[in-house]
Length: 112
Image (cartoon, rainbow, N blue to C red; front, side, top):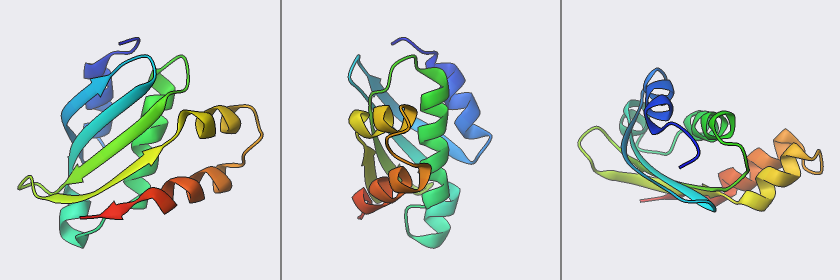
């Protein structure tokens, strides 16, 4: 990994996102996390998805696909989402606006 997993977990924890599993290679990062908000709403909170992606972007040198699996605090699945590396590159290059990027990610959310 070209980033500090402990730093990722610590930064997300401050937002009520508790990493339970993290798998990364040069092309993708898969993170499973417990969410207080997801459990209360029984839905994947869009704002938390954005926080996860932004923390990953801050901690990695090169864009890579991000896959998220969300559970409630009891470990029950709430949903999944993903952001493709090409979308992140387009965002960084100014070819995709923040709104367009966010819309693409939100469209990938699949509730359990």
